[in-house]
Image 1 (cartoon, rainbow, N blue to C red):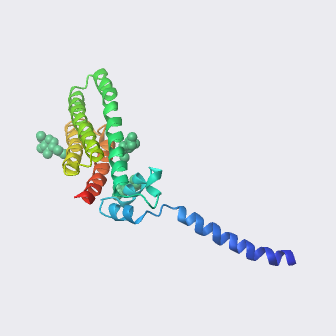
Image 2 (image 1 turned 60 degrees about the vertical axis):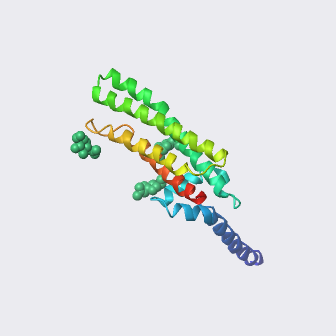
Image 3 (image 1 turned 135 degrees about the vertical axis):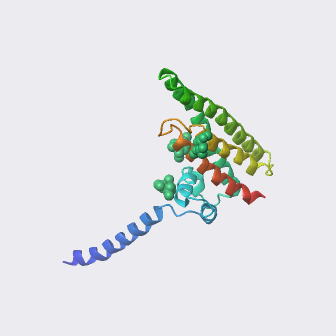
Length: 182
Ligand SMILES: *[C@@H]1O[C@H](CO)[C@@H](O)[C@H](O)[C@H]1NC(C)=O
Ligand SMILES: *[C@@H]1O[C@H](CO)[C@@H](O)[C@H](O)[C@H]1NC(C)=O
Ligand SMILES: *[C@@H]1O[C@H](CO)[C@@H](O)[C@H](O)[C@H]1NC(C)=O
């Protein structure tokens, strides 16, 4: 009986403790991340994307770190897509699908452009040159849009829609972050 009386307050405390610690684990973005992501089209996508890099959760994470993280993610995303296009192209060649081949060849060029624009933006960050970040990001974002439009007239679903939208989403974050430097 006495043991029970002692146990329940402890249990209540323990539950409280568990409740508060676990609820704080549901990503509570830093003020900076919150203010950046509020300016993007999809807040959840923005927070989840930035927090995929563990350094972002650090309270000391500043706009420079966020710029490196967001351009880094855009770069990885664009290069991954770029490397997948030849695989899709091989498939389209096998199927002798001429309009799909054409669209994919266009995308290959657009992604080459996107990758080199993001690369340049990344180098600009390293050399603390901020004036071209936004226009370079736009080149990358437009490349994703142009790639998507090149499938116009081919059979849906288009093979790169999700990836094109993904890169556009990342570019949007890069633009908002870049504006912190101008
Ligand atoms: C926003 O992003 C989240 C996470 O990526 C996704 O689940 C959700 O569908 C997106 N919302 C819209 C309206 O696209
Ligand atoms: C697809 O191409 C046709 C003809 O070139 C054009 O009229 C139409 O607006 C295009 N659609 C999209 C979604 O770009
Ligand atoms: C790029 O973005 C797309 C769409 O969000 C996603 O499916 C893909 O996994 C991303 N790739 C990388 C390498 O982050």
